[in-house]
Length: 63
Image (tube, rainbow, N blue to C red):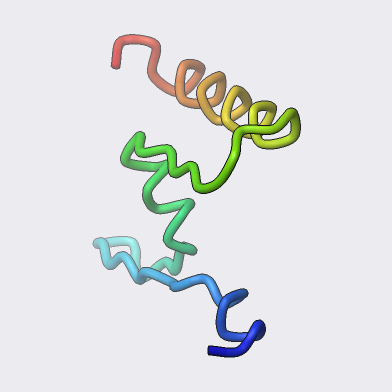
């Protein structure tokens, strides 16, 4: 497997009455309140995870 193949992020197409929308898989998982973490937790990654948690809290504080 080449480095280029490792950098490709899968896309998911969602269909609704309003049409189609394509998401990268991580954005789609976040929409379902799934946060994906791979690798060691360093300052940068911790900041990203906290930002995602804060976003989810602001979107729906009851979940």
